[in-house]
Image 1 (tube, helix red, strand yellow):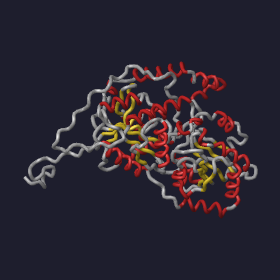
Image 2 (cartoon, helix red, strand yellow):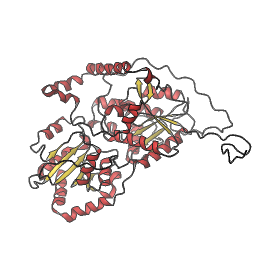
Image 3 (cartoon, helix red, strand yellow):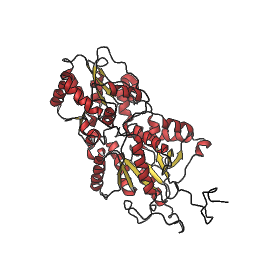
Image 4 (cartoon, helix red, strand yellow):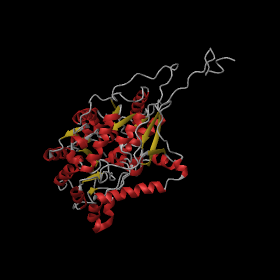
Amino acid sequence: MSTAEHPERTGSGAALPERHVPKVHVEVTTTLAARFTAGYERMVRCLIEEVQRIPDAPIELVPVVAAHRDQHRRLTDDERARLAEHPAGGTNRRRADRFGPLSPAVRRAVAIPAVGRARNALARQRRRLTTSPAIRGLDIGMPEYGSVWLDLEPAWNDPADRAELLTRLAAEGVHSAAMVADVMPEKHPEWFDPNQRRLFGRWLDAHLEHSELFLTISRNTENDLREVAEARGHDPELNCVVVPLGAELPAAQPSPVELPRGMDRFLLVVGTLEPRKNQALVIDAFDQLSARHPDLGLVLVGRQGWMVEDLVSRIRDHPLAGTRLLWPDGVTDAELAWLYGNAFLTIAPSHYEGLGVPVMEALGHGSPTLASDGGAQGEAGGTHVETIDPDDLDTLCVVLERHLLDPAHHQALVDRAATYSAPRWSTGAEVMAAALAELAAHRPPGAGRHPHLPGPGRPDPGSPEPGPPEPGPPDPAQDNRPENDRPRDNSPHD
């Protein structure tokens, strides 16, 4: 019997060791609950999808959801199908806005700590009541020794408190890693409410204490993370890997959006309405230019976020709302692709971004783009955009007017956008998978190890495997977090 007939055997008759593919558990509880697509949701879905497409991937990515506060399980068939979908963008109304004249009172009521605790208790009870034996069979228990736990989504909104979860995982020899899109609640707390800042800060501290790998979406975010780590009393010498994000939208073909008659040219702004996105600057410019350019419109794409009540009222009560100022609800990826491809200009006026994916998406669709250099947007657009000052209305009006009146000047920016080479999600997935596989190849965490210093590789196949560490502290039965710390249905980083 030849080795050619049985390639799994060597000449000496010994079987070759099977290729070890480490498991990476990635929680998607918040992503599945969102039922809409914003920046974080797109990133989570696209990276998971592309990792699972890699031939002979160096990791096995296992999406999980919270079964209870301290337990996780694999996805059902329905949940796997939903994770593979890319739902429309979020609504431009909050849940409390469904109550008509009573909406202001409802918004005030849901902000009361006791009401928030009651809603969270009902949600936990609902999860318990709907946990069938079949679903209980999907429980993962404690991830296996040497595997990896990855927080890819905004996990400060997830049920399991990370300080407790990561402590248990480390005690059981499970690596942990986190994706950090930005650290804006720490850098610019004025743009977030106290609950968001508290949740994010506790999540970040837990990972800075325990995690061995930090994935970031830009070099700027990496630098910010190191700076914030040091400010919060942690070692800034973190193990960081920049994961490039993609610019392509999943939609196969653009779907036309019906615009009001006479709106021949329109400005496009994409992003959740929130303070740092600075949509008000473009509305101000539009108000100054609209009378002189009656064919010009403004389209805002993005769900309603937080701390923007005055802005929302201004948009809805605007004299040109619905005719030349549009804020469409639930825009699909196919419609967004059409809007990018047909916009006279895409404008990204943010004060700060962890990267600026809408800039990349706009350029990828050939849209001439004006963008601030706030945060990492310079990394997103490079020389392919025309840079604007997010605090200078007068200069923005001058820039817009020149584009409206000077076709040759405008065409030059169109030509600049046409030279842009759009990054793909598959590239980021390969970088992420390689970084996680490298993490899993190091000795699992244990007592006395600094989490950010790589340990030696796995022992030789002939040497005995190290046993699991002593069990960690018992899992607390109750949620002991401070009052009003459970999240609302928004994420600080959309």
